[in-house]
Image (cartoon, rainbow, N blue to C red):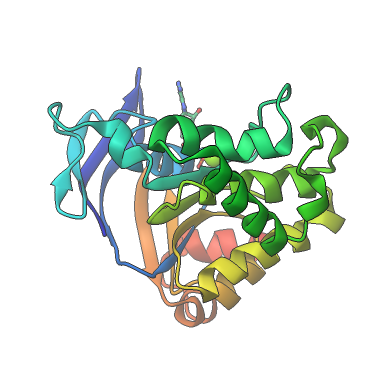
Length: 240
Ligand code: ADP
Ligand code: MG
């Protein structure tokens, strides 16, 4: 579904992503871990061109989205993104937050958009929050709404950047549960997280990034039980 070829992203002197080649297959759940500043977010944001690569190509279902002639907005709509800090529109209700993009960008009829929104709100256990404003929600609820908002665009792949890092501990579980449900339903997912339990349980593949490169990747079992890279061994000894 996504093929990355020799991706580079430079900020001034800093090589944040320093030559990554990678493939994400349809239905895969790929978890990316690594120390802070290792380029995880930059890599993830490059996948939908929130960061424009300095070098390399990104093929989305065979189409090179780094090609200037490609309409990136059309492709971006097919990749849902969930951030650490929710990024909900504060002056809009939950329902408006969810239906805005489908109605405006995809031309979905309001009645259909609302119907789909209610189905998704049921799925995340928040059907009673449709008319609530984000400020009235807990962090966990906000993140569940942010996931629903991304899903309302009916994306082919979901990108998560530390979706539980800003949450109080007691709210982490409710968000991970939704992500597990999505994974079970076959959603293609790329997840940057520090939740090693999630990686062990849900990932098809775990990737370790350090200093802008992928130093190791393996099945969760192999990754956690038999890490080969010394930096990965050191990292795991700190986080496990
Ligand atoms: P991670 O998500 O693994 O913590 P990031 O991808 O956010 O790492 O950052 C990788 C490196 O690039 C860090 O050193 C960070 O400070 C730097 N960086 C990220 N975004 C920018 C930016 N917009 N401008 C300058 N430096 C940046
Ligand atoms: Mg990050």
